[in-house]
Length: 44
Length: 289
Image (cartoon, rainbow over all chains, first blue to last red; front, side, top):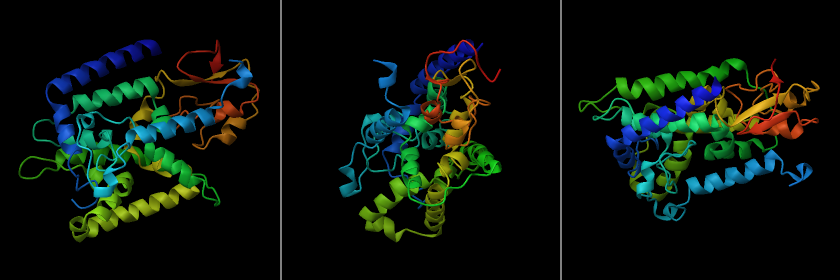
């Protein structure tokens, strides 16, 4: 049972990553991560 | 290699923690000018908690990234970050906290400061789930500005890793940022100081009480491929494993506890070698029965 859950989990993870990447979510992450996040440092 | 010559988990783990810390924060020269690394690697998430506003950070923080995408104008749910968290969770569970998280290593080092060590009341363990739901999942989506953008509430109001790694280092480097310090920074500094003080007295105080990433990975401990097994044929019930566990878990009763960070201290201390930690199943009959 556990191995089936693991396989399903990894398959879903791969599908999510590919779908999210192709629709441009990684660019949102990149844009946030390369600029100083004022909220993160307690100024925003 | 002979079984008796195997390195204990304590040494293997500390080595990997140091390597992971270095890989997560490899751009040390950026501290000098208070700049951030702006290369393409930052579109990928670090498995552990590591602020992307830290000048040395080479990857994005998964909790910050999740809030950024969920609170953006274009998207209301991040398949990308959720997929990454799901993959890390299924593969490693909370071993990410124990072996790869830079802020986890920092907490362990602080805990080495000589002081009376305390046990944490069980109720505090549930606080991190409230933080995850309210500050990471709900507020960034529900509270938006006139442009429809949400703010990363966990980073803004709580995250002590951000204050320490990003806030203090950037404030030291930029006078303009120092002039903008106000009440919010005071709140975050208070949380940071309380967290660091808590880590002196309680083992991994932040991981156990406030970390939303630990809350997520803990949910995967029951199914993660990297797991803990207790061999019922070898266990003599001495209780050494429970006594040595910093996270206050009893591996014999709950080997898949959401609090277990798979550090391997129990396996190192077991006199009969009944506890197995790894990717493969080793025991024919496991506890609890």
